Image (tube, rainbow, N blue to C red):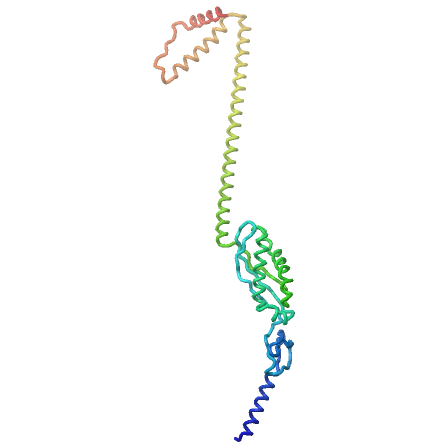
Length: 287
């Protein structure tokens, strides 16, 4: 093989490689950023494209389909100093590949950091109960807070979803202790209220009993007075009724004295009737 043949083969090979490198087929859903001598030259759209080999190069292949970005789990502090653990997922679309390539070094990492910062800020303005029950509100505010900032990067935030928002492990333990203390407090209050009601009922019972005893004593006294009046009226002032009443009281007193466990002997007067008369005479003299 002579030198001319080798040169021809090399030239043909160079031509084939040049043509191969100059033809680019861009798949659907992508746009390629092309630089010429290190400077932005143009954007290849999906389909068949041509470039000058050795002068032009594909700087970056940009995906124009919706991009799903996971935001890692992080701890955030609420307004009432509760610690929550939350993570999110963002759906982003590249609307301007040139800005996405030259506006920021890594737009995916930039969006993640924006979402994490916005989450800390939004949840930090809420109390624990509000943060746990306001997922839709957090999502809406999160999307609004980063939508304008990513426009300079040629991006559109289509949606931001809160995957999970829950108390941290230490916070769960604190909440369990708080719930146990609250249950114990309620039990103590209920017990104290029951004791209070029982004491009130017992006092009412004692008051009612005392009232009934007083009414009974009044009724007995009235009955005794009526009996005495009737006896006095029947005997026309004789001493017999008075002797009867005094004798009855005397006998009751002797009976109670005899029933006492400390009494050993009860001495009765020989003539009870004369004794009572003597007492009656003393009462008359005093009167």
